[in-house]
Image (tube, rainbow, N blue to C red; front, side, top):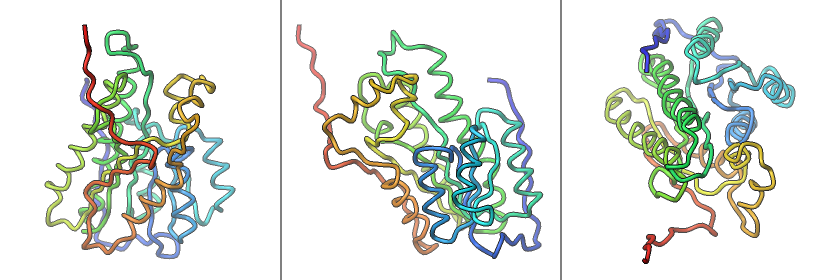
Length: 270
C-alpha cells in the first residue's frame, strides 16, 4: 500500500468554542444504521453533531430533521485521504473542538468461503474497516491530546472475537479494530483521552443488504423469526459509554441480542 499523508494540525492554546459551548461528536458513516441512530441520540441529548458520510442527500435529510444548529454535515469517504483532509479542514475552519469521534464507517461484503471470495470485496473491507478507521483516528487524536480531553469510540464486532464461516476478512478486520483500540489505550495513558471498542452481535440495519450486494430478500432472511438488536440499541450503548464521568473508561463492550449465543466448534466427520 502506497504511503499517503494526511494533513494534521494540533489545536492552538486558544479556546475553540463549539456552538453554544456544547460537546461535539464527529460520526463517520452517519447516513444510516448505527451512525444515523447515534446522530439522533446525541443531538436529542444536547450534543452538537458533525455527521459525515458518502451519501450527501441522506446527510441533508438528517440535517433537516435535526436542525442546522444541532447538526453539521460534511461529505466523507474514509477510504480517500483527500476526503479526510477536507473534513479536518472544515473542523479547523470552524474552530470546532472535538470531544468524541465515533468511527462507525465500515461494512461486510460477501459470505463466501475464503477460497471462493471476491478479492475486491476483501480489499474494500480492508480499506474501509481498517485503513479508513486508522486514518480518521490519526487525524483527530492530536486535537484531543493537545487539549487533554476526548474520547474515541470504535465500532468493532463480535466477529472480531468469534470466527464463523464466511466472515474471513470481515472478522479479521474487526479483530484488528479490537487490538488497535487496546493499543491506543496504551499509547494514550496519561493524556486523559479515552478509547472504547463497541462489539455488536446480530443487528438489523442495512448491514446484511450491503453484505449481499443489495439482495433484500436474502438480507431479510437472516433476521427471520429472531429478534435482533436494532441501531437504537447500539446508539444507546455508545451514548452511555460517552456519558460516563471522564475518569471512567469502558475498554470493550460486547453486545448480543438474547436470541444469539456462542456456536459449537465445528467437527467434520469423514
